[in-house]
Structures are given as C-alpha cells and as structure tokens.
Length: 212
Image (cartoon, rainbow, N blue to C red; front, side, top):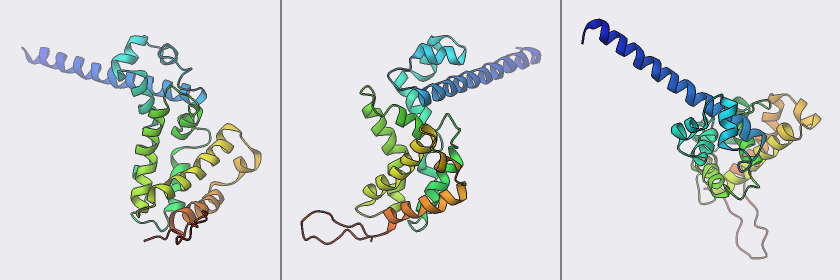
C-alpha cells in the first residue's frame, strides 16, 4: 500500500470513528430528553431514533437494548465523584454536586429521569440497580458505619424532593431561591442525616444509632 493509500485509509477510519461517536452521542442525548419527559415504558426505540434523526436499528446496534440505553442516560454526574473523603461537610457537598451537575433547566438530569419512570413496572429493578450503584453506594461509602446506607437514602431523599419541587412542579419560592442559599439550607439537613445521631422510634429500649 502506498503512502497516499495509507493516508486515505487512515483518514476514512478516523472519519468513521468520529461519525460513530457523534451517532452514539446523538442517541444518548435524544434518549435523555425523552426519558426526562416521559416514563420508561412509554418511550420507544422508534421515538428515540426519530428524535436523533437515525434508523431505529442503529439504536440497538450502539446500545444493545432499551434497558442498556436507559442505564446509560443515568450515567451523568453521579455521586461517585463527590468532593471530600470524610462525612463532615458531605451534606453540603452533596447539594452542591447536585446543583453543579444538574441545573433545574437540564433535561438530562438523571434524578429527573428516574422520577419520571419511578411508577413503571417495566424497569423497577433497573431503577433500583442504578439508584444504588450511581447514587446510594458512593454516598454510603463516604458516610461509613453500619447505618451508612440508611443515611445515604435519607440524604438523597432531600435531593429528590428538591428535584420534584423545582423541576417538575416548578414551585415559585423554591425555584427562585439562590443556589448559595439552597446549598446552606438543604446541605444542613443532609448533614444532619449523615453525621448526627438517629433516634430510634420503636418501643424497644435499644440505644439510638450512633455514628462511629
């Protein structure tokens, strides 16, 4: 093969690779937008392909299944990169991370996508898997202790509530509050769940759960 042929072949290969990356990204962005506005069971492969401007067969070619594509839409700004390695201050870091990665106008907000599909029976196992792997487990690992997962769920419940009020219901007061103020308010609540003593509400005489 001549030098010219080699250069041509390399150029064609690079162009195909760029096209493949662009196609995959177009599918992912289309899926994120659609899943953020409708449930998993209602959004179809054909809908996603139409939104991306491609043939439906390409969606399967690039992602294998609707389930795999849905999971890929959630892999954005997850909690595996939370700042800091200790529980102190993690509550404020959590809400700051949320606001930094998912603005209230961002249609690709992974929590919003999960909320939209929460009532779907078709992917309840998928949702639990994604919620645990991308959100709860990373938080629980930083919190530590035998009750780390419970504390992670309590803290994340605050972010889900904020998400519903701001992104779905568009409530006036919470939508208008400056991010800095929201970080202080919600961060303090999250930090309470993460580091303060959790009271037992049962009638047993066991001691309250304490942080270690």
